[in-house]
Image (tube, rainbow, N blue to C red; front, side, top):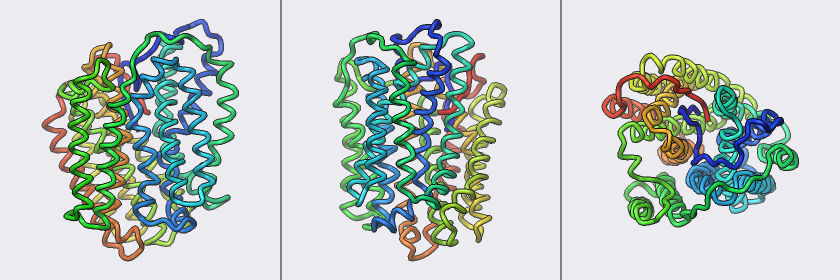
Length: 476
C-alpha cells in the first residue's frame, strides 16, 4: 500500500521523542519496523487461509468475510483515536499498550474454537494496531531529522508493499504446513520480543500536549462503517431489497451524518471534516478508498477461486500470488519515479484503466493462469493508483495539516479494504459457498466497472500539475 507525503504520519506528530543524539535510534527503527510489519501483514495473511478456517470452524461466507473486515474496520476506524491517545498519554506508552493488545489478540485468534472468539480476536488485533501504528510512526518521525528522517521514512515506506505481498505468501505456507492457527501464532513470539526490547531503545518522555480524546466521534464513525459493512454482507444472503439489508445501510448513512455533526460540535474533533472539502484531499481519499478496496477484494476472491474452483492447495495458492505482489511493487515504484514529472492525474487515470483491464481478464478468462494474470495486471495499475492517491492528497497541504491529511488517507486505505471485501463477498456469494462459479465473474466484472468509473472521476476530480519539489512517495 503506497502513501506519499512531505510529512509521513497518520496522526499529529508529537515531540516527546525528538532527539538526534539518541545513539540507538536506528536499532529502535528496526524494532518498530518489525512491529509495523506485523500489522500490515495481518491485512492479507488470512486470505489464503479462509477456506481452511471455514472448514475447521464450520463458518459460512458471511462470517469469513468478517474475519477480514473486523480487523481492517477496527484498524482504520480507530487509527486517529490512537494518534490522539499518543498525544495525551505519550507515544511509547500507547505503542506498548497497542502491541500488548495485538499480541494477546493474535493468541486468542489462533486458539479460537468458534466464530465468536475468532472475531473478537480479530477485532482486538485491529484495536491494537490502531494504537500501535500512529504512535510508532510518531516516534520514528520525531527521532530523526534532516536527511536521516527521509532515510528512516524510506525504510518505513518499504514495509507496505512488502508486508502485503509476504502476507499472502506466508498465509499459504503456514496454512499448508502447521495449519491456519499459525498465521496468528507467529505474531506472539515477535510481539513478546518487541515488548521486551523496545523500552530499552525508546526513552519515556512526558507527552507534549494535553488533549481531549474524541471518543464519541471514533465510536460513531466506526459504528457507521460497521453498519455499512453488515448491510453489504447481508445483501449476499437476503438480497439488496431485503429490510435486513436496507435498514443497516440506512443506519450507516444516518450515523455518518451524526459523525459530521459531532465533529463540528466538539472542541478537539477526531477529524476536521472540512479537510474533505479540499479538492486534492477529497480526490486522494476517493482514489485510496477505491484502490485499496479493489486490491484487497481481488486477493479475497482469488484465494477462494483458486482453492474452490480450481482445487489448488493453500501453498500453491500463496505462491500463485507472487506475480500479484510483484505487479503491485512494480506499479508503485514506476509511479513513484514518474509522479514528479506527470503529476497525480495521469497516473490515477492510467492506473485505474489498467486495473479495469486486469479485472476483466480475471472475470472472463478461463483457467488459473488467466485468473492470476488478470489480478496481477490489476495490481500493477492499483500500485500506481496508490502513489497517485497519496501524492494528490498531500502535495498541496501545508505543514500544519500534513499529519491530518495523511491520517485521512491512511484510514481510507483500511476502510476501503473492508468495504471492498464486503461488497464482492455479496456479489460472489454463491461461488464463495461452492454452489457455482458465476459469482466470481460477476464480482470481477463489478471490479472492472468500478475501476473504469473511478478513472472517469479521477480525470475530473484530481487536480492537474506536478507535485511540489521534495515530495517523497512512500508506502504504508
